[in-house]
Amino acid sequence: MRRLQMMTEEEVKYLVIHCSATRCDRDYTEEMLLRDHLARHFRGIGYHFYIRKDGKKTQHRMLLEVGAHCVPYNRCSIGICYEGGLDEHGKPANTLTKEQEERIADLLINLHQLFPKAKIVGHRDLPGATPKECPCLDTHAVFGWIEEL
Ligand SMILES: [Zn+2]
Figure (cartoon, protein in one colour):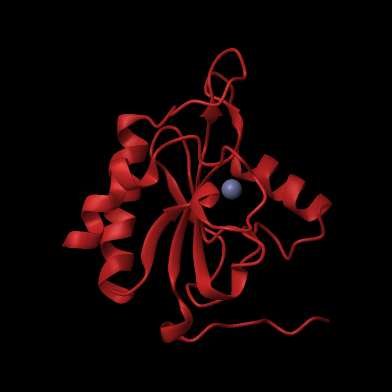
């Protein structure tokens, strides 16, 4: 069995926002996410937090547990994924619901207090990370204000 890999508080440099890259008019449940991540041989869901369209938040990793969401930044980041990111036509778009935006903001405010030096970034903002679009929104414009608190 693989040992659980942990970060120290000082090692957490980024709070990384992701989207599930699923259509905003379809449901992508925690169970579907788990199924897909197990198929990729992750240890359960790779994100620390998942936020459904209705604002429901679930936690899938311990805060300092190394996640599986953002190669090569997994050992220095906490991953937060929101359900959606594609419009009704399957095109990348900011599909955040009001409930999701509020829930993520609350979560980031708490994480910012715990990790004041960690930057709030989108997956695509990290150099060397693969996806071009994720999280399909301007993370700094939407959540950057929290870093100033
Ligand atoms: Zn991502």
